[in-house]
Length: 129
Image (tube, rainbow, N blue to C red; front, top):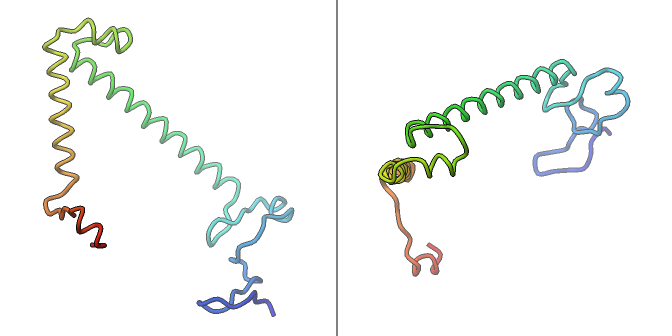
């Protein structure tokens, strides 16, 4: 009684407070919602949502300033759209930006790739290596 079938890990007690269940009207009246092993109040959920929103906004502001800084360093100014900025800058500066971006990208790729990598040939992959 109070169990729901057998599993490889033993029986599941559906009467336990931590059991998965559908949120019902009783949950809405108490203001508690099951989250993992505990119930989370509306205030807790509201605080988590607000912190997530503020954090996302701050990251967005940082990225906007980073893009603006890259435009100033790379092209010399930041007024107008990207097409106007690129067309108004000197050709040597545009080429330097492309070369610099390529060097940064290739260095990041080399760093993320690691030092010891095993390349699998087509024949090895067909054999199931």
